[in-house]
Amino acid sequence: MLGKQQKVLTLTKPIREEAITNLHSRMLPPSLAIADLGCSSGPNTFFVVSEVIRTVEKLCRHLNQQSPEYQVFLNDLPGNDFNNIFRSLGSFKDKLSREMVSGVGPCFLSGIPGSFYGRLFPSKSLHFVHSSYSLMWLSQVPEGVENNKGNIYMASTSPSNVLKAYYQQFQRDFSLFLQCRAKEVVEGGCMVLTFLGRRSDDPSSNECCLIWELMATALKDLASKGMIKEEEVDSFNIPQYTPCLSEVEEEVVKEGSFIINHTEVSAVDWNAYSDWNTMDNEFSEAEIVSDGAYNVTKCMRAVAEPLLISHFGEDIIEQIFRSYQEVLTDHMSKHKTEFINVTVSMTRRA
Image (cartoon, rainbow, N blue to C red; front, side, top):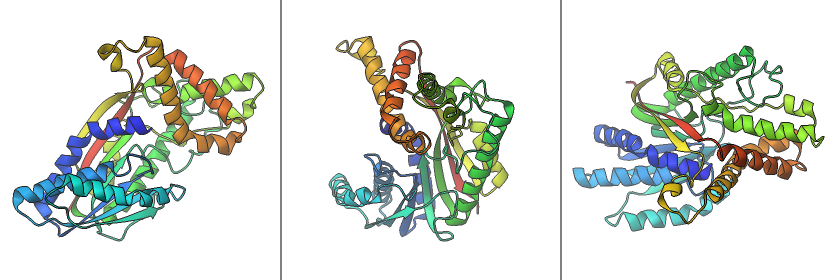
């Protein structure tokens, strides 16, 4: 979801700036360790790291302090294209040097492959941890959801045991994430986490589940035409949980190692071109919707394709996304659609 991710990163920038400013002013570490968890390998990979370094450098000028050394850790699952990140490292450093004309502290970057639902770093080694649009992914599909027939995620027609299984899997995973980071983050260190989430208390509400319900519609359409088996659709479930703010807060309080400083719930339109409708008459409404559906399909393909190939096979994948784009175009032409983001900034307790 590259376009959406960049919008979300821009929306949540003030929260990160506040967190890193408070942290650096308090601690003034000679070496600052930054971890971005779920970094991916696209154009947004260095977005947050660059922003954090710029913030710290400006602060150092203001306080007349020497720049720290920067240890940057970029984490994702082992299948991530870390080679692409390393190939981009030169241009990242060059861009940073051009932007910070008065100089910038030495920057040492490492790729850290592995699941963040386990230990990734030595004890008390990190000052600032960031994650955006990653923590809604669960470590696995919850157990006991075999009766979620006709759905591929939580939905209004999902049995109550399915909703409970998804929530309990989120609780286990996020609690484990917090326990691991509690060991790795120094006292007074910060985390800023953004989830794809929801405002509603209902875990099957449209604001978080609709994007997958429309995918289910596309899959069931292909099943009705005999292109995939109905049993294959019934046995396919997405390993994701989109929490509301209170569910995130509850796990942080329960684990007990972090103090919540700042929370925010924001929204981003599915359609990257939605604002143009009022700004520019160059595009017709139909063109805006069609382009929007194409872009949402592209975003969803980036995250869902490996799961779909693993379950349905590679031969049908083009047809799945063609059908999905048609369903999206129809829905987006009739309804306002937006993603809800839940952001939490917290500090490691002393």
